[in-house]
Image (cartoon, rainbow, N blue to C red; front, side, top):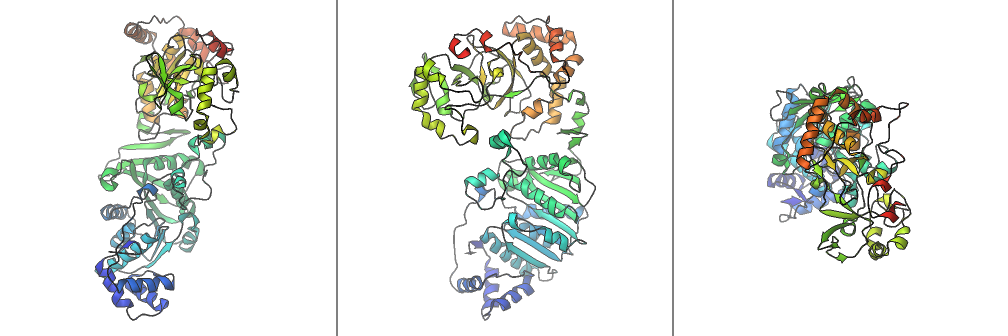
Length: 606
């Protein structure tokens, strides 16, 4: 049965019917409920009181419960909530004050009532009104079933969590042990914005990313992370603990930001849960636990929630370096530095149905299955993350149109020099204009990103940003033209095949792989990023390497892929990586451009 879209048991309905039958005023109704279960202001408005009286005096009021999972609303089941509370009690937590900033249907509040014996005040905040009612009904049911349990004062506030002033609670209970507990939404701000949700902070770019970073995704963040940091801000000087069920990425980001924010939190723990079992979702999540009002700590100990006797990992800050495994890092930290070559991301166009092509029977076919006629000059082979499987790659299954040699370049030359390509692009201009990303605002028609001199280097070392594959590839030209990478891939561009081959061998070495395992998080949306890859000091790797081992690896590559790469440029390779005036070198020599690659695209090279 439901009232106000909230589940209610027959027992609670009967209780309310009996208690409120002869009650005529809002004040007397609220006093009766307060005495019964401790909830203050059970009814906020007279119309709520009168409406509920009318409903429970009539037939059962049934409504269908909406699906709120798209809002990141994964309600904690009672069993898990009780296990979390029991874990906290075993850790010596016995709070007087409970705060749940997104209390949902109230299972954590009920678990706390069932576990802790000295609670004096409970504060719940929830934006979704049916959940506010269901929490109240559930608390009332709890005290009907457990009349002997001590009744704390309870406030369930119908409020947007981002507008609620939690600092007042912290100041009002400065001497009491506080437990901030909950399961904030598992959703990003951009997702909620697309759903036109009002449950958003007023300022979305809360980490103050600027320019291209904010426009291309770094301004997007997890709502659970925002709420977690809100709680740190409000309660870091309070006695007590915070325990939140959040995505693993939130915990990683919280620990990462700790070095800069310096919150007074310690004993950080990540206790992994089985999200499929608990919430029926394929999301890596865990219980984040920490102690408040302590000297700041910057590492997090990882356990299994269901068997937390033994620590399984430790991650966080080692001096000024952030690592995913402190144990592994000890064996490979000597190559943690700055790459002498700059890693780049592949091309981004956000118009795959038009820009990505197949070659069928000598013709190009786009994503709309339209056969099109183009000049070959601006068409290049392109690789996606799923294509990076072999050690050496010189063929592509897909092609793409490259409209610029550098970001922001005027594209008017296409109409004059390549009329077939221009006609095709112009015919589909509406598709380009519909691109949502702000990076294309005020840019030339048919603009792309992730393009530069490095894109046209004939030899590339690549790795997928998406796949959890700690393996690098060597990409060679295709039919005399350099192969492009899409924006899910990262690359180093070389003009010398030998330099590319040496780099491939170094990056695929055991030392490099161990280091990458120590600094990457396998559950991250992108296992590898530019920031991660730039930490590999290839020069240090080279100086530690045996010439004999490099030669053996070269011989294996030459034999398997019919190449003839020699070690005679090794010293030159080393010299190229030695910093000049403490400045990072650019990988492509300024005078060596794409025009030196043999190709028929002469007009595009001018």
